[in-house]
Length: 456
Image (cartoon, rainbow, N blue to C red; front, side):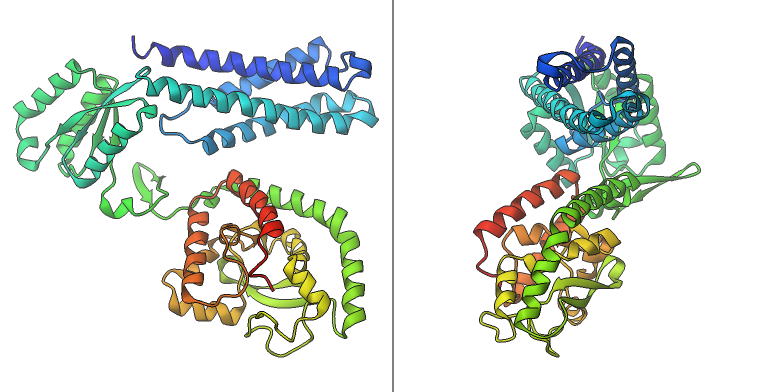
């Protein structure tokens, strides 16, 4: 009875998904038509769209959500499915549209589908969480072993009722007990009587006992999950690789190790930086270049070597904001620094001096969001003072980053500032998502407007 919802939910989800997609297309077709007349795909094409979206949703199992899933994983699934759908739409339908309207309609359709489907899926996700927190659609779970991590897991299950996992108790499976066949038989009988759905195993080293537990679970449709030991709990990201019949744990993988995530981030970087280059840098570079030249002799751009991805050195571009000097790589700009020109002071206070770095993004040396790159001498100094400092180079450096939107911008005056920057950079690397990038971009705009005290 309690599992009937899980059999019904996928169908409800797919039907709702199709309804939202159909509504989005129909609404957009009326809004973009002449005086409210329908201007969308005909009935045959519309039916094909419905079928294509249904097939994509089912094949990609968009309806399958882990009980502990987060919203960013939900968005990740939606984006990939939507990209597949839009590629098919572009092939089948866009060529038959009027040339004048095809690009506009397709672009607006993409945004509309993403907006409405996001609202639907997030809303469904939140409703499902609320439903489970009320005691419905639950699973019964037990923990085998009484280690410290098991205790913490029990606390989480008690606290997070929205997971829909009822903790039914610990079972002490010490080596002496696991060798007792009667004790194992007793546990199996209790598991059936209590209708256990999930068994969490911790610190069981007897391979024969673990095999018996898994065989029993398979026979009674019970999920078995292994709790990693204390050492592995220190790492946020754990995944598995298969070598033939052997599985190994990947302890320090990061989200951007996945090709799909790298493609998504690079696509965002290219689109964003292309937009800035075409619509802003195309006129900003000549204008700022003229002002720089009028005030002082020297180049328009200041090109500085900085450490990037995998610690490789690249040439970072900036508008020149100082008079040419021999100490730019070693001495940070200070408040009232005599080297800073008048136009340079304005550029630095508004962060416009960083704008040419969008060209670095296009060239692939940088990303829109990531750890800010430091000069080579500064990098060498910080590496000797901060443990694991080099780990911030696991991804491309960024024009902006999590540390910058948390207030750590400008001159580094105290050791705690670089330590705090590193901690925030490390957190970003371990917890990257496209939504975190978008959030940081929005917060960067806020920082540029309201918080310019430490930038000079």
